[in-house]
Image (cartoon, rainbow over all chains, first blue to last red; front, side, top):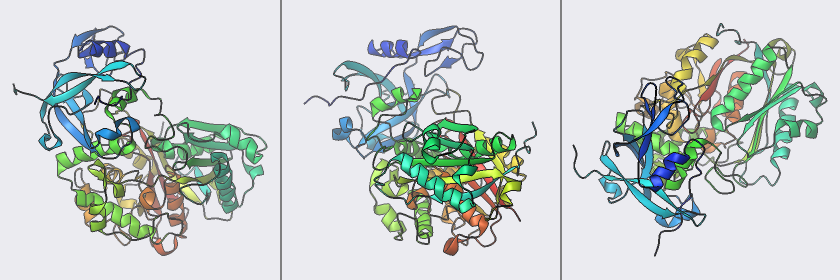
Length: 145
Length: 388
């Protein structure tokens, strides 16, 4: 049985290129073209130096679990069959103030510990509008550097 | 700008409620009208005295420019229709005080009217998510409801400081004990710590009894000048400090430690404006969408050191009879949830000395706070003082 459709993201004009890269299975960050600060989520203007110059650079693709929840209540009808499921808040190894969310894959909730090293994987899923899209998910890192 | 410029310039002269329920059976317009009329009656004023209205909403209520003509307000000189949920609740009262102090308005009715159970549940049924940019990075993972957001930060606090489930439970048990003394409260049956620990998980580490009661209802307060309030029937409650602001959110790319809420950022300004400190606060009505919201704010408003909110609530300090009674009405967990104004209204009752069986003896200074900034960046808070 295939997974039920997921609530799909609604990219904005700043984030569309990031979501398009995720669709190609590339995890990117913006980097300010003036001061070099990496940033996520995508925005047109650097909040450190106000520069509008920026480029896309590959993220390391690794991070550590900052916190997590185990969701038991079926808030979303589309995901009712998946409860209980974990949602992770991952601090990226690229910078202390960069966080991404995601579900835990290739492991169980019992494997979650604070600071667990994880790596990004890409999941092609069906959106609730019938179209496919791609999500960044997280699995325990196989080798800790 | 001197931070004391707004201190004691405006006062709360009246409070009003509709009944709280799971299904009001009426529109949010009717709720707003009923709460405002009750607040005006409490203040000894009429609709003809009103010249300004202020509210906040997230697409779930009726705006001032609909409520004013529905009430028959003769002329509106100022209104506020602020986007936002609980994080801005107290800023509505603060901005009303600002409008009065600036001479733009003389009588402002602040209201919040929601059918938050029967029509627009925050938990995701009956409406879409608020149109904020963060949602695209969360909803596809099944992360949408405020309880889930707060659970994430509650866990972070447990990781950093060893905060326990039982400590969250003390908050729920204490507030239910207070609600037992409040006729307006939706939940008045006492609960024990065992009841708490037996309640089902919503989003681990938060359980059902960590969560506020999604409520249909409205609350309103009347803000006017201190001089005018002194000529009205009720003892004035002075707005000594009013603050709103913030900076970081979990996706702002500027924060690194989410065990510290936005309350820590605004608290120094609030205390400076009011000329008071944590030791001066006799009673605190602290935004409790979830138990953790109380715990983190007790730390961030300076009632205990960072990380010691768990032991602090477990000590009994926040109970009636403790050193800092908290959420004397039962809060959102047990009285009902209309996004903050019922906390302000309870603080007013305490400072008037009319809180009945749950009265904090001799209460003169109260803190009342908004959602501490975890769902949308920013928070707001008030320090209120009896005019004695």
